Image (cartoon, rainbow, N blue to C red; front, side, top):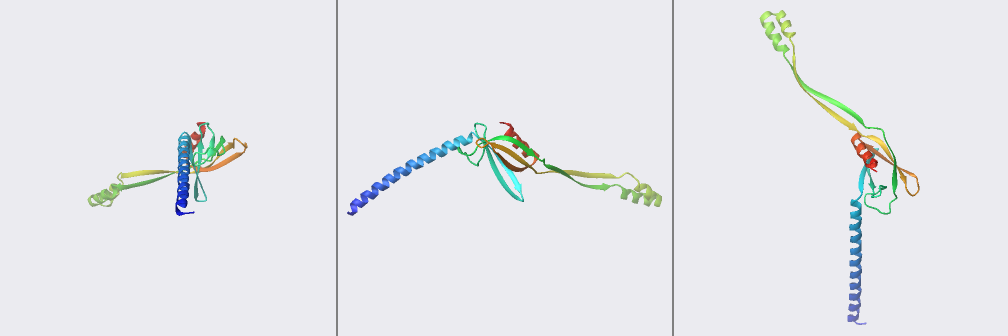
Length: 181
């Protein structure tokens, strides 16, 4: 076999591989675009769970049929669930008030009264009403509570639980995600 024959066969093989790769890439990108378009029709709720100081996020998606599945991306083959129940222990709200201010009025009056009338004037001046200039700031903190989402498998009829931690506002968002079914 001479060099020309080897070159021709190699060139033919590379041309065929190039055509196959181009077809594969076109098909792959077409499928990705289709999946992205289908995924945009779905809604997603990212459920937070913080246990033992470690945070994790469970993405629950609602497909166009109103069924739920657990996946960060669109997935046609993921196990589908129906919403069964939702439990929440409630979050703990604490308030802390800080007051800053100054008390004015007594010491100056007591000094003036004492200078004019002696000890009796000091007592009378000191018993005068005091003026308080203050500013209060109340800080409210909402500590997350724990909850559980119960989903029923469409295929096996078993219950899957998803644990979560949420503030009261976050819980209301989770609840509306499942109630809008």
